[in-house]
Amino acid sequence: MQHARCFQKGFAGTRTRDIAEEAGINLALLNYYFRSKEKLFDIIVLETMQSFFNSMADAFNNDQTSLESKVETLVSNYIDLLTKNPDIPLFILSELKMNPTEIVKKIGVKDLVMNSYFMKQYIEEANAGKIAMLHPMHFIMNMMGMIVFPFIASPILKSLGDLPQDDFNDMMQQRKKMIPLWIKAILNTNPNQ
Image (cartoon, rainbow, N blue to C red; front, side, top):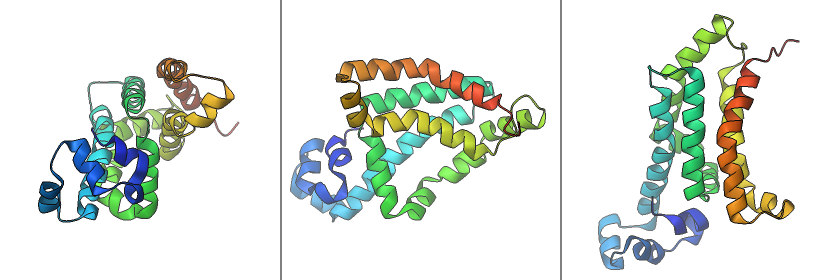
């Protein structure tokens, strides 16, 4: 994923020249093949989001792993991805804000999540009483929030805690172990008590 300038600046702030320089190609060639900044940016947005969600798909549809193992894999994959590309969450949020329905439809994230083996496991375990009967979206929101929010809020968090980037990254690595434990506690909570 080599779109750092696009991630940092978004569509409005990124020039076609920036994209050509980052890709190491001639601006005229870029314009010839893509015709417009909008078409090129659409490709970058879709590629970024597909990459972001594909790591979810692999873990979600593995029928050989437990629910707990899937959570550990997802958390680890996303923290590694976002540590390498910390501007992705804000980039995706800003682009989703502009056209959420179209982007979600193009990448097929609804089918990816709602029709996954993971969701089948989740429902089976909830019906069997092994985990709390919560709407699956609570699970998704909690897990994604615990992973993504620190990256979105990193400037504030680093300032509040006087954390240099290396210390922040160390904390994110620690969260690889902590988030699955917190998710397990949530899944074992009875919301009706």
